[in-house]
Amino acid sequence: MAKFSLYSISLKSLSPAHTFNYELDRTFFEAIDGDEVKKGKVSVEVVVKKNSSTFEFNFKLKGVIQIPCSRCLEDIDQEIDSQNRLVVKLGKEYSEESDEVIIIPEDEGEINVAWFLYEFVALNIPIKHVHPPGKCDKTMSSKLRKHRVSSDDDEDSPGEVEADDDSDDDSSMSDVPDPRWEGLKGLNLEDN
Image (cartoon, rainbow, N blue to C red):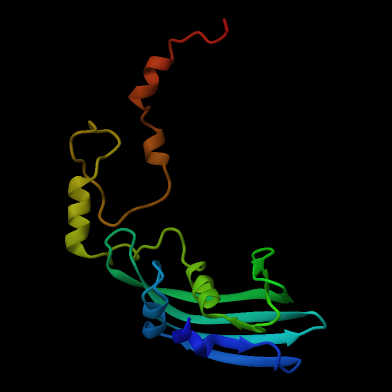
């Protein structure tokens, strides 16, 4: 992680409370080589408080990243605004006690927070990230509609789908029974 030496924090020389500021930009995201984020601009403030045997890191991240839309694959802006906590203890070897507590070797006495910063950004990405209705790439949306199957058509024939109306409620599909369940209605399960 020599290319991330800027994000190394020496714990042995810290004052009881210390603040670090970082700007995560496209260069950072491309260098970290993570799958989720390649572009963005995120401001980070790290406040480190030294206790008797631990170091408490409080991270504040705020900014915007660009991620591909789940529907049309064009980039969309995703706001990042999070606060995260990490407790660091000194010990014999590196280990993670939990999501928030790690142990680093006492003889090193240094932690590189670059990967933690990336993970905090990536954890703020929603599972489904799509453009607002009507904002998806028109070419990709038309191809999606062409190849999608509606619930009341045969599975092999393409159906009509409203443009960019990928709503999460399944109420329209619950009105029409699935024909695959019809064969199970005649079973008598009470004899078993």
